[in-house]
Image (cartoon, rainbow, N blue to C red; front, side):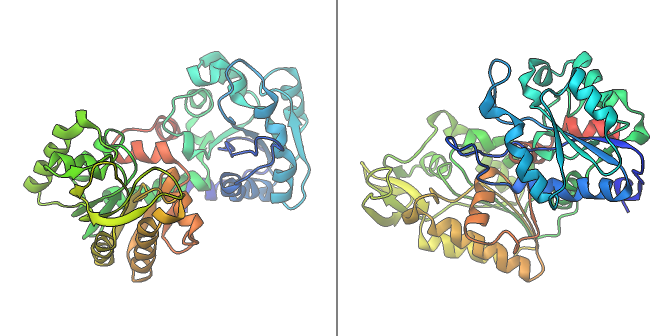
Length: 399
C-alpha cells in the first residue's frame, strides 16, 4: 500500500493542494466540466473517513491584478458540497490572513474548508517562500494532489514542502495514480510500444518525440504537425498548417528514428477543406498532394486504417493530441477511429494512457474514457514528464 493509504489522518488537519482549475460558464459562472473536482474526491474522503479535517487550496483561471469575482473559488462551494454527499463546505475569503487562519484553527474532525484562489497573490506563481510559509501554518500535514500543476515550482505546489517534515508530506491518491500510470509507460512499457502524437505544432512536441525515440517502437504523427513532416519530405501541402522553420527538425527526427529502428507513421491521406470552417467543402486526397487553396484538417480513411492496425498490435499506448479538428463534425472521423482502436487494444490487454487536454476531451466526447487504462488530468505536466523533466511538485514530496 502507498504511504498515503497507510497513514491515519485522525485528528490531523490536512492542507491539500488540489487542482480545481475548472472551466466556468462566462455568464452564469456555473461549472461546465467538473472532472478535476471529481478526481480529488477520493483523497478528501479518505482523510475525512479517518477522522481528519481538510483544508483545500487551489488556483482558478489566470487573474491578472489581485482578486476578481469571476475567478473566485466561492463559485465552487455548492458543487463541492454536492460531490461530498451534501457535506457543508466552509469558505475563507482569502487563502492567508486572519480569517483563513481562524477558520482553519477551528475546523473539527470531518469538516472541510475551501480557501480563496491562491493566484490572487502574485507570490503564488513566483514561488515566494514567505507566502508558502503562511500557507503551511494552516495544516499539520501537506498533501499534493494537483498533478495538473506538478510542473510548476509555485508556492503551494513545491516551495511549501520545506515547512513540513518528510513524514508529513504526501501525494494524494490522484497524484499517486498519475505518477504510477506515467511510470508504467516511461519505464515499464511492454513492447510494441506505440506513441500517438497529434496537435498543431511540431515545436510543441519536439522534446517528447525525441525522448520517445529512446523508448517507443512506433510513433504515429497526426494533426496539423503532420504537414510539416510532409513538406519536409518534399510533399505539396496546399494551405495546411506548417512550421517552415521546423522543416529541418522534422527531417532530423525522421533520420534519428531510422537509426534507432523506430517506425514513424505519417498519414498517407487526408480529409482536406477549402476553408477552416464547419461548413467547408471537403475531399479525400493524398497528404503529399494537397492542391493550393485547400488544407488538411483530418487524417484520411487509409491513414486511419493503417494507424488502427499499428495500435491493435501494441502492448503499450501513449496518446497525446488529436488527429484533426475533431471539434467540427466533418473532421472528427480520424480522431474517433484512433479512440476506437485504443479502446479495442486496451480490451485485448494493452496498457493505454491518454493525456493532454484535447485527447482527453476527445475520449470523453466519444465516450471512451472508461475504455482506456488511464486518462491523465495534467496536460502540461504530463508532457513535461514524458519529455524526461523532473517535475517540481513530485520532487518536493519525495525529497
